Length: 121
Image (cartoon, rainbow, N blue to C red; front, side, top):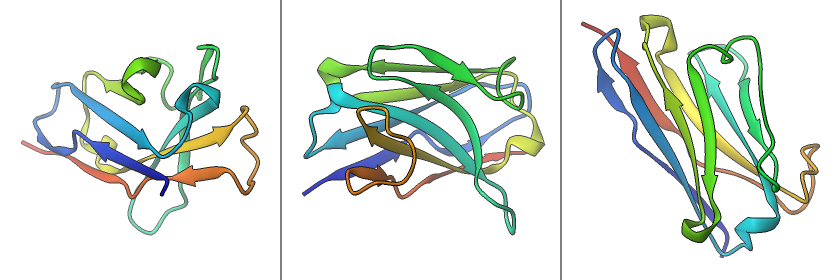
């Protein structure tokens, strides 16, 4: 059974940092590219960052200054480090795994269930 589980959400004060984890099971993690998205209430899911199976990273404009994506294939885990958190970063954060970096929808692509990050003083 394939599972992607996000960890690391919670409440944090503005200016703080948070590292989110995406732990995979049931797949050969090393052949999957990973993306992190977030979703604000009543808005569409927003792409933040991508890391390919070879470790190449790209960021959208929303994420390029304060977000860092990484992966540890030995741990079947991808990470999203968020620094200098702002109230507008409050959202549910999702990871997405795409086999062979085929990020378009496919039968071997999977979503996690999401983890809530709340930034508030």
